[in-house]
Length: 253
Image 1: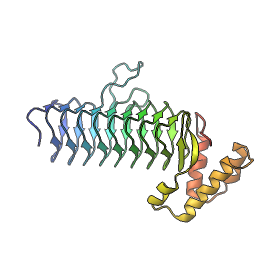
Image 2: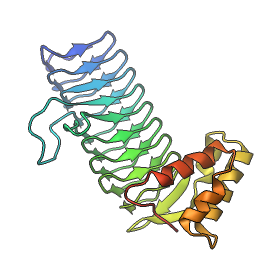
Image 3: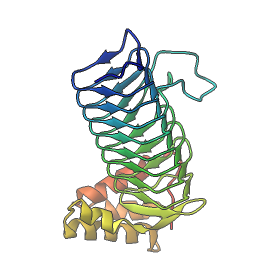
Image 4: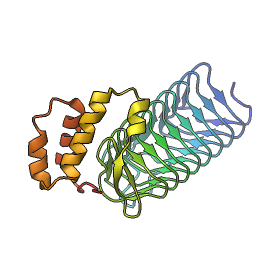
């Protein structure tokens, strides 16, 4: 059902079984897929919204990026199936650098959060109340950001990582870790999150061992990576690859 007061641009594509509430504004080149609910007073443009999403009141999706280099090039924002966007969230579209901002499937973006241009947010990610994510940030699958988290541009958050409330993150956070503070430092491993995602106990222990070698041994970082390279664990190999590809450097305990 589309409310009679909603404004729908003629270039927008609204699939069957979509609900759009009062005074919502669906701007140009927007696609809203089946089963999605857009509550009243939302505004979106240059966006592709997946199936069975729910977009709450006063959210802004796909508006012009807050980047002084942006010159009006045609870009977009994509929101994956099953994602919930709560009140007053802003999701900016991309710039020429990447072309789009990507939000994965089955994410929960809580009220007043902001995701800037050219970010890539994985599947099953939770972004807490009033958290701010600067441009070009990458967040891995199943990561959790608590409330009032701030992430510097170009930082990467590894899969299954968890950031404590108020964390200000300026360096990469390895997969499976927890981090907190200003500036954020590692505080251990997200054991609870790994168990909830049904990781095997053997896998969790392998991650524990890798964490000890990287951060609690006398090895230099490079020597620790060499020591871990022979591991048969896919989880450990993900950590090694993440550390080696870091451009900003990794946070440490």
